[in-house]
Image (cartoon, rainbow, N blue to C red; front, side, top):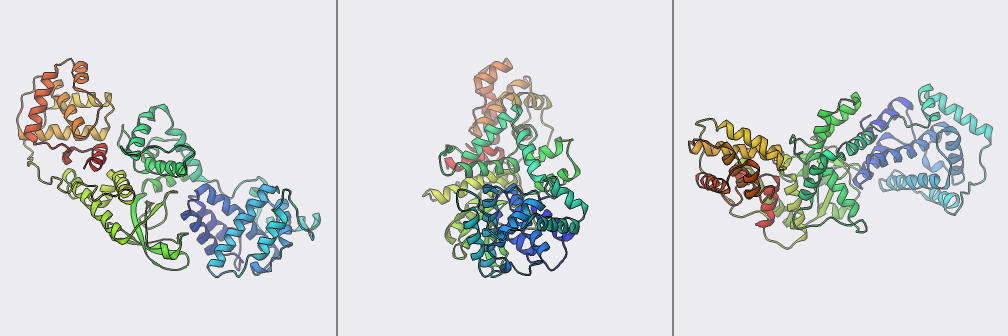
Amino acid sequence: MKNVYDKVSYFFSHELGGNLVITQEWVEGFLRQKAWQGSTDKELSEIWDQLQLLIQYLAVTEHETLEEISGPEYSIFIEWAGHATSFKITLQSVRRIFGVLEEFFQYLIGRRLLHTAEDLQLAAKEIAGGKRLRLLKHHLDDDELERLKHEWTHSLGPRTAMMLDDEASIFADIVERLMNKLAGYFQKNVFDEDFHRALFLYVGPANTIPSPHQENFEEFWMGFWDYFLFDYHLIADDRSPVDHFCQSQEKLSGEERAVLRDLVQAEFSVFYINKIVNQDWVECVNLFTDEVFEMPYPAVDNKMMKRLLFFGHIFSHGTIMANYVASVDISPNLRRRIKQEISRQREIFTVQQPDASWKEFFRRHSIAVRHTMHVLTTVSTVNVTPLHARQQYPSVEKKREPQPAVVEVLQRMMPKYGFSLHDIRLAEKMWSDYCQRRETQVRKPAVWAAAVVYTFSLLNSLFNASMEELAQDAGISTSGIYASRGKIEDILELDVHDARYLNEEGFLLLLYMS
């Protein structure tokens, strides 16, 4: 199963007949609300396990409405769950199931599908409100409980009965298993440099990592891992970690691969709510493309709903993809400013990648979008993006192949200094542009390669390698690097932050230095 919604769908389609007291629509609507509140897929699965017990009990007892369950009968329900399923009757587990049921009942009350939760609340207080579990009177004897268990397990067939006895869920939580594998895989030492680079990009030059006692500590790391897995580009292959994991892992089941393929397709999106469709869905609009799609009804006040700007990962058809979807409360004017600022950033990006779509821009620079929104919503500033960023550069016509010896040295040299595959491609582009605008006789490839690397570092405010280090490692003089760098700068008419060769670090720092 891909996620908790697939488990719910399978359960209602295969395990139970029709005319149920609690419908699939109610359950899915409640789970979507919990997802908006930040519940992880694991937590949603645990909530579903609790709700499933009540649905199973109602199917056996043949109640027609939830209001028919009296306060004392919740004690019978708890006893039945402990005998007929894998549910363990402890004070903690009973409090947990009452907590889930009360939230679910309040959700139904808010949708006018249930009148009151008073009996449930009184039962929860009486049974699990003290220091000890206190089951109410009128409980069932062992024979009656065994009869209910027998009716339940045989009505579902041997498959489900076996799974209950084995204390297993209907289906393994594939997504949770994958996330555990991803976490373990990317905690290897080989990815340490990537982790620190991603953390620098996520935090930025003007912020700090919160300490464990700070209120935003958990939210910070949820946001970071969302960025790292879906938007960060690995140094070695320029893939997102999720994509890299999908391509490199052989020991994955077919179901796990199917889930990973879905994860790889998740796209970063910034959107707002346009209107309420019904009790479970809202109509949303992509801030930049004006695409209209539907999302689950968020757990926010109706008056506040239209002031929120959301950002996170979604499928193209509008289903929440990632666990972490954040929002900021802003005015319509600030929303327009955010759109203007980020639109200007996309224009800068098109210098490097002409005709780039919003999807392509977000795929490369979603971290700049995150920082722009953070700065505009927390700091009193007029602009984030340079107002007069250069758009016109010397034309480059393909006349000749760049000197291959220099390219070979670049490809060997740059990884030693921590440059990414994307950095190498941009540096190669710089060398190729230079070769098109000026025919050059290359006597010492290492000199030109070092000059390209040093120039690229300065443009992007990187300090991977000093001129002295490059000269010493390549066995060349600093004067040779300096002279070649001057020629590259003059012929290409380079800017301080030249949009043609900006990498992710350079693009981000451009915003903070403007």
